[in-house]
Image (tube, rainbow, N blue to C red; front, top):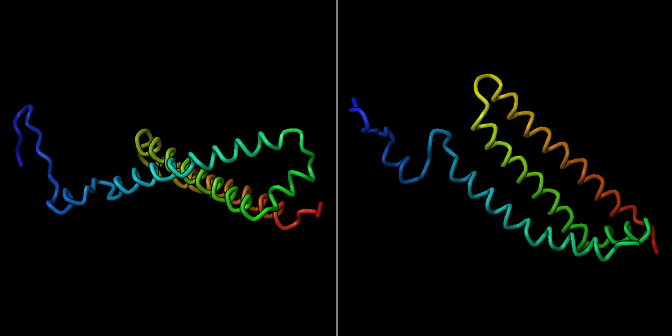
Length: 136
């Protein structure tokens, strides 16, 4: 297919154009998941900040007891999982835009592995506080 100067021809199938799939085959889905996680993080972050402000000056035992309440445990877990997933998605966009060659795979794996490991540490810490909370 030849193109004259200034005339850009895009070689995409009709089905690919309809589905909105680019070369990576998941750009639209990635974009939507980023938006959905950011929307979910808004109320979760507001809840967390308001809750922590309400716990200012509380002792360690009170804080552990607060985390041990089922609603707080679930919301904290949701906040942590959404935060790390959103972080990983955002960093993946930077990696896709600026890292080329063999380093792309390595940085992608490092990004996903680090996000997963950090999320796992946070989840274990929350569950440890939730299940081993002392009675007040």
